[in-house]
Length: 301
Image (cartoon, rainbow, N blue to C red; front, side, top):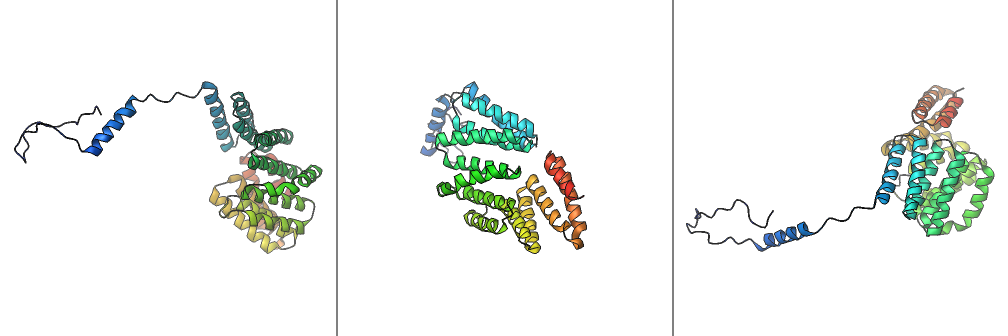
C-alpha cells in the first residue's frame, strides 16, 4: 500500500453523472493507512546476539531428542544448553537445562550424573530465589533416590525437607512432594503411612492436573500393599486411561506393567497379567529403557 487508493476511476460517476473532482477516504481507513505507513518506516528489531540464539537452539535440540526417546543424546544436549545459557548469563535457563539434563541422564541409566545435575539445578535455583523450581529439583532427587533404592539418602532428604514443606508455593509441586513421601514409605514397607501421604497428595493436587495418572499408579501400589487387589486394579486402570488421554508412552507402559504384576499374582487372571507384562516389556524396549524392560521380563519368570 502506497497511501493511494488503487484502481480508482476519475471518469464521471454512473450514478451522479458528475465528475469526481477529488477522492475522500473515510477517516478510519485514512488512519489505518497512516498507521501502516508508520509501521513501514519503523526498523525491524535487532536480531538476538548469536550466543543467545545458539543457547536457545541447543535447548530446542535437546527437547527434540527427549521427545524422540534418545536419552543419552538429550542428556548431552541439555548439558550443552546449560553451559551455553550460563555463558550468556541466563541463569534461570541454565537451571532449567540442568534439571532437564538430570531427568535425561536418569532415563539413560546414569544415576550419578542425574544426581549431580539435579543437585546443581537445586543450588542455582536456591541462589536465584526460584522456590518452586528448587522444590521441583528436590522432588526429582527424591524420586531418583527411591527408584535406585537409596533408602538412607531418601530418608535424610525427607528429614531435611519435611519441616520446610509449608514454603512450597505451588499446589502441584506440593502434591508431587507428598507422592514422593508415599513412595518412600512404600519402599520401607509402611503402607499405612504411604496411604496417609498419598491422601495429602490428592488433597493438594489441582483439578485436571496431568499428574493425577501418576498419583493413581502410586495409590494402586498402596492398595495392593494393604491387601485390596480390587481397589488396586481400579486405580491401575484409571491410571492407564489417564496416561492414554495424555499420550504418554512411558506412563502407559508403567501402568501396563503395574496392572500386569497385580493380575499375574491372581491365578485365575495370570494369563491376562502375563500378556500385559509382555506388552510392557516390549514397550520398554522400544522406549530404550532397559532396566524397566528387564524388571518386567523378570516378573514373567
